[in-house]
Length: 386
Image 1 (cartoon, rainbow, N blue to C red):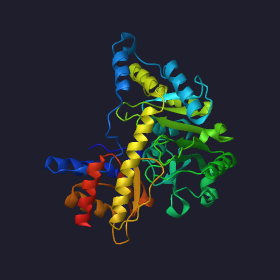
Image 2 (cartoon, one colour):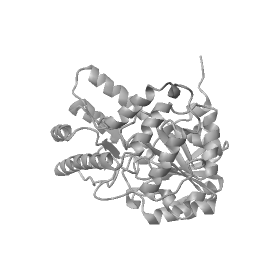
Image 3 (cartoon, one colour):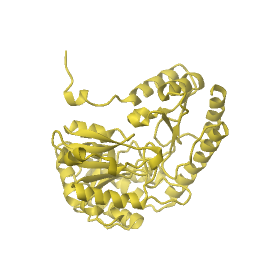
């Protein structure tokens, strides 16, 4: 009776809904599911952040509409954090915009700068909102394959002139979801030069910048010369502070780009609940203790799972960042059927790589979001069915 809009019909299939449906069905049947499919921290939000929220929620002044541009104290805390972490100086008044989680900002950003028919250069595989936001804005995704032989970095030189002529935005995400890859300084320098030459906006998603191992420290694109003229960067408290359900993130960088996103948001939402913003301030001002503990925990889990899979004959590399393993399957396996096999016969959930785009074909993603003991149990189950 009712027909979906052409833009909604143009959205790629959201495989994760089907995975979640199968997972819920398995749990309803009483099966003991080990979920390695979801990128959602299993550890609780630190108590000091919860306490800050509780205290702020008791203040009636925080019960009213929040400012669209975010509380000054939150924007100042984000600026201080960026200066300490990346040595990047941001103007809290013009170069920072708090978001209801970075996902909504990433999805809304194309509405500010894409006209119908404009192209967005999008890595593939990728975080799905890059494509979805482009399509909702009437833009056309041009997929940049992320290949293992190139370190899962896009080959900028291979993008045809016809695509570059119509492109307005290029998305990058390092440390990368789903591949776990990291960008080199050389790539970032090439990217900035490429964007300036082709009059592109760089959308840099650094949601996993604090989740790194073996002494590696991911960089912000805004650290590099020339980036501030062409870049808007998105960050989030979700993974860093185990706050995925709290929905606190931000955009920062070029003031014209930040202002454009702010104009879109002012017509869509009324800002983040003020008590949540103050909890975000507590998180950002807390120092490195929690982050160090988080990284140590995920590194331990990474080593358990990677070493265990390699003992079973798999070929899995240890990522330097994120809490994902991006695993290439042998040619005899097809990712969706293999994931279904693990769910049906081992009660293990993994994510088929094709859910992140056609260039994810032949891969699966595993998340480090269960305990070490559960990972050892998962390894035993995989051994029995593989």
